[in-house]
Structure formats: structure tokens, C-alpha cells
Amino acid sequence: MSESACRGFRILVSLPLAVVARVLLAGMPLMLVSLVWVAGPARIHAAEAEESPVAAAQPPASQGTAMVLGGGIDASWHFFQQNGLCVLEQQIPDFGTARFFGGTGTELVFELMGHRILAAASAVRVRELTPTWHPGFPAWRVIGEMGEVLRNGASGGEPLSGELLMSLYRGYDLELGPFGTQPEVVPAGFDVRIGAQRFRTPYGPFLACTRNPSAYSWADMERTRINHGEQIWQLETEDLIHLEALAQFARENPSVRAIYVDGHADATGTPAANLALSKRRAETVARALEGFGVPSAMLVLRYHGDRYPVADNATAAGRSANRRTTVRLAREAPAGESEVAGR
Image (cartoon, rainbow, N blue to C red; front, side, top):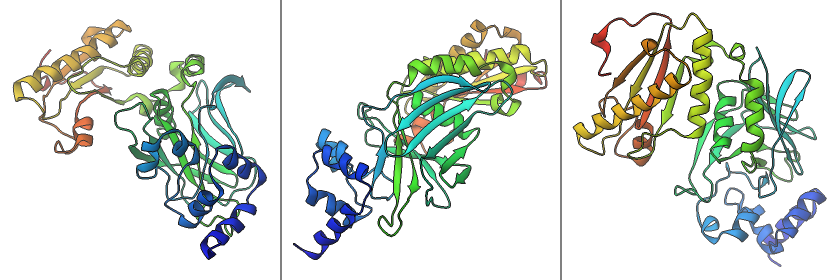
């Protein structure tokens, strides 16, 4: 046996029994496991490699660590109420618990808590992983960093917690890390994956539990960005959910004097076509707000075509960011019709 293989074997046998069992049950040959540990950043997620040869051939989705805990087809979410708070929770085998919690007048918080003391890094990053059914698979993006690193996990409040909630609602898994309990055995640590499976069913009652408008602050609702697909102006379910909560906040908050709705497009089409598309996007959002009870006199509708990009139209990611409708709450009445691009 080669020296590198021996090193891999020594590391394997020193791991917790539960972790070893999960690897062996995944059907991964022992030698491949040892090579993964020796390779460090070039790890292979056993379950993904077995289920999808394409996924195994793509660049790794981990954050440079040697192992990922959690995720998989068995991931599930559960809603319950505890001590006056609304809780949405997932149990993560071999690690601990991921949960969102909040309530009337309290901040929405996300926390990841392990069963044991962790040797966490000074910063725990959160990444959104594109699901296998998505045409962009295996793309990923960094959402941000957890606000607080704890002895046995990490936690974060708004606006990060809200973005994580919406990522899971859209079907994207999350990956947080790095963590580590035995630095001398696993120097690079490990990541924790939070699956989006079975998320939407308990999400409904969780949202109903937390959607009281008094639970939101002005900062939560002041600015909203809705992104659209190519040549798309219709709204997704999660967009309508947020717009309904925004409308309720606006109706019951007398300091809201105006709501600016601005439609935008990427630079794919002609200027005239882009202007028309951005108009349809803004009108669709405005109609949704009116349907949720916002007076039409409060709405200021504008559309800009591709004149105000927020990212590079030469890239697919940039064009995706530019296809958007923004909604802004204002404490002042509209300054005048000169600001309005069209109604």
C-alpha cells in the first residue's frame, strides 16, 4: 500500500463511527475515500458522485473542505410554535439542527447548531447551490457570512435570514462552513448542507405565523427586488407572498405615503422592446399590489428598459441581475409627474 493510501486509511479509522458508516453505506470504495481525504480541497461528495456522474465531473461545490454533512433526499422541514415564537426546523444527521425562528415584533433569525463544541472558522460562509433539475446546475453563489460564530454553530439575523429562507423556498440547497471538531484529523474542516426538500409545505404555516405586519420594520420592507427570467414578466409564488406582506405593511403603516415600482430589462433586445418589457414587469407588480389592497393613488409606476443596469450585460449572471422590478416605500408623497417614466 502506498504512503498516501496509508495516510488516508489512518485518517478514516480515526473518524467518528457514524460518519464512517454513512460513507460506507453510500457505496464508496475505501480507496476512493482515502484519496478524497488526501486530496483536501478536491473532495468528491459520495452521494452526488454515485447518483450523478455529471455532478461528480463538475468543479466541487464545497467551500474547500474535505467533507459535507447533511442534505440528501431524506432532508425534511417541520413547523411548530415554542415560547411564543414560530419555528421552522430541519434535523441534520451527524451534526445537529438548522432552524428559522421569529414572531410578532421579533427579528427573523436563522441558526445552525451542532450537538458538540465545534472548532469553527472565524467566518462561516453561506452558499446557495443550484439544484440538479435547474439548467444552471452545478452553479453556486456566495450569499454572505453568518453574523455570529458560536461554540457549537453559527447564527444570523435579517436581511441574511430572509434571503436564506427564500433560497430554500425556490428549491436551492444551502451549504455553510467551514466547521471542524478534530483539526488534527480533518485540517480543512467540513461543511454542513441544508436541503430544500419538503420545505414548501411547512413554510406556509410558518409564514402565516410570522406575517403580522407589526413584526416587520421599515428596513425590512423599504426596498424589494424581484428578478425575472428572459422575456418574462409574470411573478413567482414567492414574489406574490412577499408582495402581499408588503401591501399589508403599507396599508397598516400610515408613514407609507408612496410606493415606487420600477421595471427594468437586460440589453438582449432592441431598446423599444426592452422598454415595453420593463413596462409589463412594472405593471404586473403594480396590479399585484392593487389586488392586495394598496390604493392605486399610492403607486408610482416607472419603466426604464435597459437604461439602468446594475451588472454587466455581457455575462449571463449580469443579465439575470438586470432583469428586475424594484419596489420602494417612501415616507413622502410623489414629488411630481416629471419623475414618472410612464403609467
